Image 1: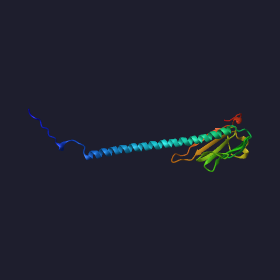
Image 2 (image 1 turned 90 degrees about the vertical axis):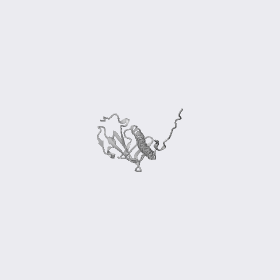
Image 3 (image 1 turned 90 degrees about the horizontal axis):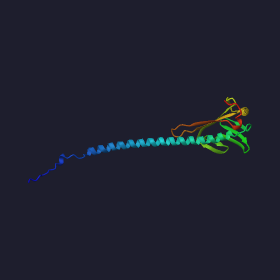
Image 4 (image 1 turned 180 degrees about the vertical axis):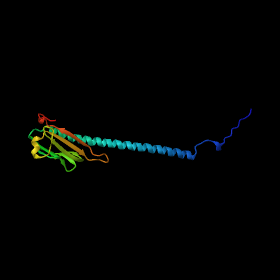
Length: 176
């Protein structure tokens, strides 16, 4: 019987060269960088949406508080109307909503909302015609639009929300 001899030729073997290893590492690094950039972009978008939601929720809360108070006023209780302030008097005493310290909205001395860019009232008569905010027009006020504009944060821009309020005791009027 003949014995079979095997010879190995190491010079012709197919292995991984240094260039192939470096090329694989570069491709892996590029893929990782793309994944990280995508993740960062998605996190930025998430924080942007979360901040916007928070700003809108805070502004809505303040608008609801103001609207609910104004819905319950009675005729003859309005004592002052201005574009950035509204005052009425009820059994608990006077209540004033105003743009306070140039960046917040207050009810009397209680802050309802901070980081406000603008806060204003528009007044309308029983036919829906706009009224200028003067003392002479107080008896004619039948509908009030309350508007809040928040300050922009980062690059998100400001948010403006509004609500029309018709005090319950004023509902007998013809509002269009």
